[in-house]
Length: 74
Figure 1: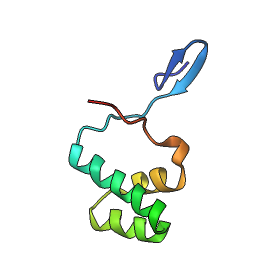
Figure 2: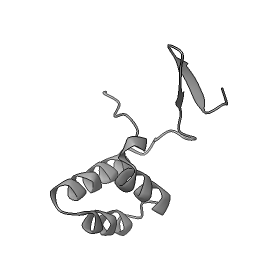
Figure 3: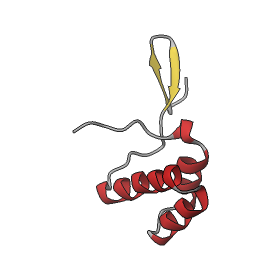
Figure 4: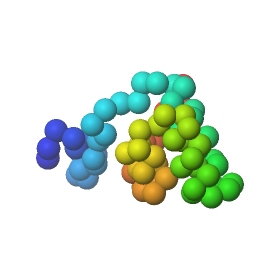
């Protein structure tokens, strides 16, 4: 198991290289996902780009939903 994996009952799950610490950016990304669901991917991309979200993050959350982080309850 490498440093980016944790063991969960015999299953190694990939862990992100960094943790989300910016609540505002989290909310922007979540809204971008909502835009994609209610409108289309192009609109979501434009929204996220307009809010200076990193292109790698945009690609991950919109085009690879299985790689999204699990929301944390507070």
